[in-house]
Length: 81
Length: 257
Image (cartoon, rainbow over all chains, first blue to last red; front, top):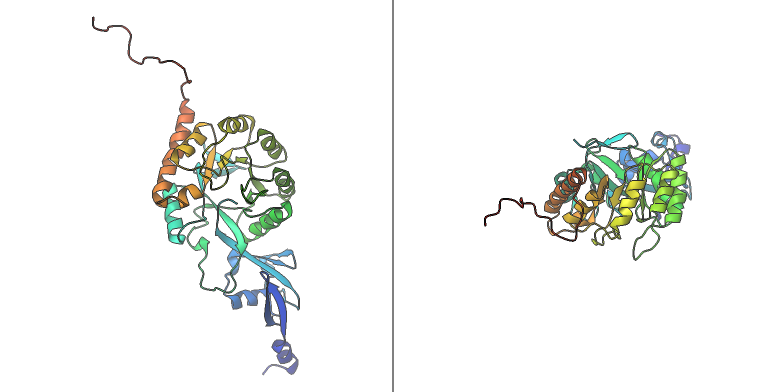
């Protein structure tokens, strides 16, 4: 059983913007956990956190808060234009 | 024997470079790339689809250990967006190489050379190996080289137009003036266009639509591979000068009377 404060903390949802869409996630969730939740393989993405690029080794220490904005990109088929 | 093409010290094992857009599926993409013999494969940078978890990743089909994955800034209309995209690509990718595009017009997809130069300056300073997609303008090409770009990528014709080499003389001038490799990028329609680009002295040709949009992309990829090789060989062999009148290739003596 988790201490009361932790359970309360976990039960709170916050709104963050991911790739232009507002999503509700658990307060304090780490970037790493978010990627797992979204089913995204972290080795092929890059993330901008409030317009700043985050190194991959920071994914598990960065925790989300209300109003954060994320851009998660990957490589797709394309040539020019 | 032809010399090996090098971009900023990296050995490039093909003179045909290909894009990965517009294919029916990843399987066709993979087969066409294999048939093309390309060593450099360009990819776009886009938002991950966060609602569709089942979607496969392009890089599951194109092994980054086998190919040089060249991220591009396709779709960027400002130098800020292009720089931002390039930085993200470097973080997600495996190299400092970027095919830099700053588009200036939606209808023609022609480059905004002013914004391109601005973005190139920033990225060169940040240690990127910048390969800029530019118009077939020798002056712009020289400026891009002066600021430290590692290759020049002039268009043959607008992206996806299939019009072929619209200004062969400019491509020649760009090639003769540049000390970095020149890669003809965009506008090729069919194999002969690719051969002409190489005959003009281009170091490589990059294409996407000409292969992906063909009726049989894998066949066209193979045709392009041979055309690029033939064009390169013809360039090295040295073509004969164009003459207005005939010049017989059989002896003039010994004709029967």
